[in-house]
Image 1 (cartoon, rainbow, N blue to C red):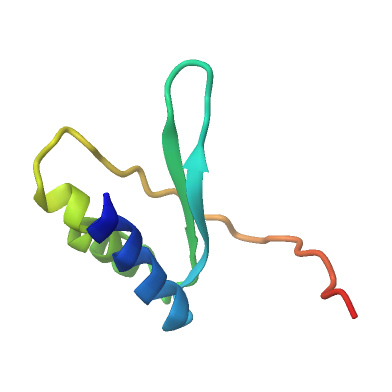
Image 2 (image 1 turned 60 degrees about the horizontal axis):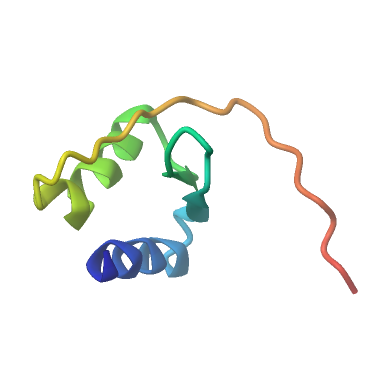
Length: 76
């Protein structure tokens, strides 16, 4: 999991990952990553390159486009 978190921190610093984190769903935990990409193939590539996927522990990604997003204004 440390390599997984480091991977997403790197994508965040590079400006690709907008927000990443765990979701504590009562049905079972899962994670959410919002990324800015040129196309869906790039998002799929980010998911495939995640070390947690390479570890073959049963984790998987689902990629879905978000055509618009509303962000809060920065605090002064």
